[in-house]
Image 1 (cartoon, helix red, strand yellow):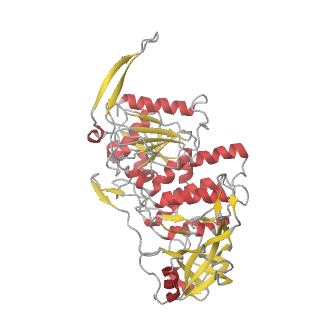
Image 2: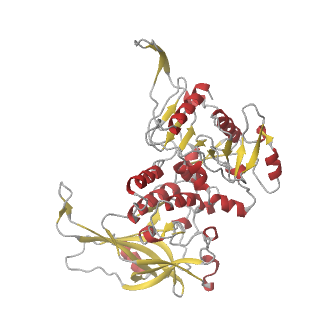
Image 3: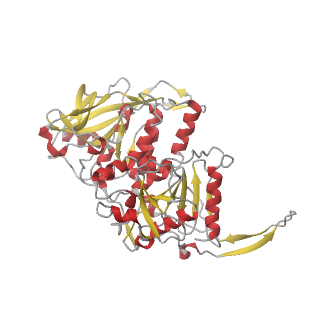
Length: 539
């Protein structure tokens, strides 16, 4: 990487960390290091070593966000901890980690956090403990290096992709007319067509919360470096006749999320956030996260645990309730109204161990996982969407229950990583309508009932099984709005929505889909059939 690029990063970082730098950026000083960090030493050192922070030392450090791209050539394990702490050759690290060490040194930092080396990978207890701290690790890092364009740990990120960077251009020198007579140059290039090449890191699930939580992000693309902090102070460093493709954020579309939350807390006090706002930001976060892929499917919940923990710190007493199975209990039933998304997952650029490109698509799961209950979005490995509207009125009460039902067996969800050793279910009191398979077909044939099944394959034991519609929400609105967005005419019921479930054991139900029943064509005076109000338990 050219010296002028690194100098530009250092200058941007210095501005962001000083009181007279970026307006609104806050550098809180040295914070406690994570449990373990990589001590990168000095620029001339040929070794690095793992430093266990047993004393709770506070110091600036850098975190790395990158694609593993498959099994790692070197990870921390119970058998090599002493060797790592004594020191290993820099060349023993895969190329992306070597590049991260070089950048950390060049930026003037001594400590680097890398998950593969700083978490004991064959110790499940250590993994779960450190995963629960991921939010703090990235939030407290002075900066995060994002190896955006590298598809694997062996790929590296400091060598620009000149083939992609080359565009017809010319460089013209110029001199200013002021007394300093400054000399410079401007490069004029043909504007590239098409879209920016997909950044592999933007397709990875874990990288989502890493970017959102980081106060300062230094993202290395194929030929540019993007520096961005929470105050929208983005700097694009581009050397020579390189093309710059404008557009949305290279790496994380929600980079401002936590900054907005922190600013609102400063302006309005600790208890400013209500549950409506909480539900809105969580729905958006889940939608963005589920568009990305995970190497380990069961990381679905741990992959957003750090973000949930960070958001929880900004909630007032009693706001949001408990965070269980990927939802906030006081935001129910709203957060139960989700379905598989029609939007395809982000195209995943898979790379082999040598960094060779292997195009692919995220595989959408065809069976339901027991990592989370059927009512949680986390039980499926595919993009999801939520359904909420200003006119929604929630006509159901929901409570989370932990009961033991041996008859259900291993099919029920367990959430050991969240401290639950019993079945987690929701008890919903709402209007319930029983429908035979024939009636469901008739409902859908009319066009007034739309059902989005969770799975591509029918998971019910029998296709002849009776299902139930659980009515959770009813949407009311006027016939029209005037130019000033004022209501025109009385409110009317436009549609109702809820869950499609079936009974798996006496008194226990499993979700199989989401439905929306349009009532806009009802004859005046006609009443929709909402069934009978009762209480059901959904696992």
